[in-house]
Figure (cartoon, rainbow, N blue to C red):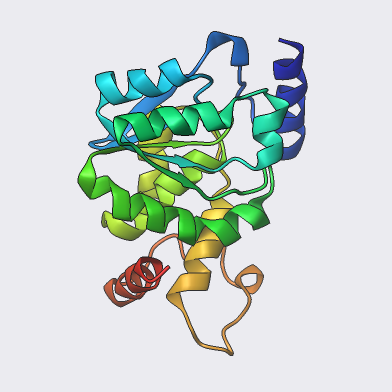
Length: 213
């Protein structure tokens, strides 16, 4: 409980949101769309079996850094071994917690892993609490691959799983992928709603670039 309190203070300080993570309550997740589940970190191999048997999970995408796993005392090798025993594909795309720039940089690779895996069954996307990094990946996927604008995707996810992923990280990653003009204005110079939606041509370019990662 003390670790959860420390983590929540850090989250509120860095992310300015009221959401909390309670490690002692175990894994908590939300089905966002068919085959797309967002949640907190699996804590033991039994969590993996539950995801496999009850939710049909066939791939797991983990956004945690090593230090996150170590902080919570998670036996990651045991979890990965359990995934292998069930035939669950396991992906790690580490992004620094509470760091929108790190998330912006890693979003394309994370969405690439999600997009490639989701055709084979349910994908469980998680970070530590399932309140920042992993929902941002799910929102970016819905935005880039499911014909939604960013705000629609954001509202869809947060209506089902109350959380506060950084919109700026998603906008930034979209800007990075959608325009290869070397003379383009920096995102900071553009209107606040820039790249909250994209043209069909831009969406195709984003999808092509993500699929090459």
